[in-house]
Each structure stands twice: as C-alpha cells, then as structure tokens.
Length: 119
Length: 117
Image (cartoon, rainbow over all chains, first blue to last red; front, side, top):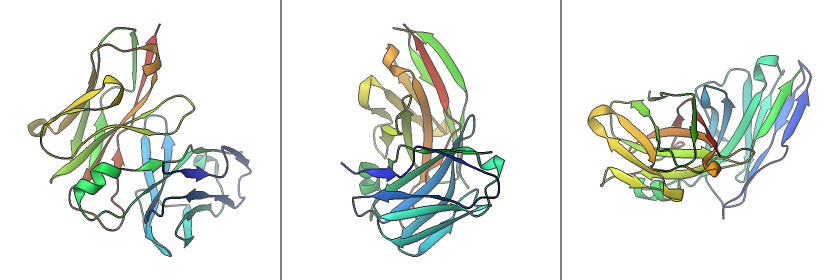
C-alpha cells in the first residue's frame, strides 16, 4: 500500500515562528498536495507539485510556501505563523496518470494529518 | 473553477436508519466524482468514485452514490447505518481530462455523521 507519512501529528508554535511541515510518500508518485482542513470548510488546496522543483498555487496559498527538492518529499512552510493558520494540514499524493481511467483507479492517498496550533 | 456544496454539516441518526448525504457541484464540463470518509482519528479514505458509465456507483462498507448529471448531484446513500459509520464524509470533484499539473481535487465542506447506538 502507498504510504504518505507526515512527520508530526501535533504541533504547537508561537506567532511569528517559521514552521516546517514535512510529508514523505513511498510510491514514487509524481503529484503531491497540501490541504488544510477546517470545520465547515472541508479541505482547501494550498499548494501542489507535479514534479521535483515544480510547484503550483492552490486556492489559498497566501502565507505559505512549499519545497520539493526530492520526489518523495514535499514540505509546507509557514514563513511567519499566525493564529489564523491554526488548522489540520493534510498531505496527499497521486500518480501522474495518462488517462482518467488510471486516475479513477488510483485516486489520492492521504497522510494522517498534522494538527497545528499557533498561539 | 469548480466548487462543491454539501447540504448538511451535521447529521445525527440511530443505528439501522437510512442515510443520504447530498452533494452538488458546479463545473461547466465533465467531472470525476468522489466520496471520501474520515473516521475519528484516522486519515481520509476513498469510499467510492464515479468515472463513467453506470451512474449508480457502489463503494465499500455498503455505501452507494448516484450521479445525476442534470442536477449536478452525487448523493451518497446507505440503507442501514451502523455505529461504526460515525465519521465525516467529504464529496469531491475533479475535472475530466486535466491529467498533468496536479489532477486537483476540490472538496465540499464535509458532513459530520453521528450514529447513535
């Protein structure tokens, strides 16, 4: 089974700190994603990457950046953490599919999440 | 851009009751449709997906969903719920044919389901 591992389950950081959230997948997937999950808002895409050193903004990239130096690792960076970034952060990966049928078969694989509290 | 709307934020029901969760999406083209489930303390898991063909899709754990193209809906159903179905359920869409650059999923706001024993 594909595994997507997020390095921390819980984090507490202070306002203004630089925060790194790490995600590693072990199935050679091209695509990796960072979402944040908030009650009533579901999952919102922050950034995604479809190749090493490639990144694209999602729907809510403000206040975040990402790094993908190796295929298996995708890091989310909060340059200066703020209280409104308190949330559950989910990482996901998927293969770069050629057809929609392949995509339908694979879908996404999610990590267990990192619950970040900024105080 | 696509968007997804889930009608209920919270649903409370008793064991053996039937469950139906509404999902409507907004997108001008063809989509792939998904339902994900997140059990307490666990990661998101795929319940079922619609790719093409029969609009009635069967997933794991007795769940099914029906795609009604004319209504832009993909409602999730289960005839008889169990206490173990207590979870948060997310509907998601992905535009058809966008394969490179991410295959982005857009999620609805989620529905928390509590099944009372």
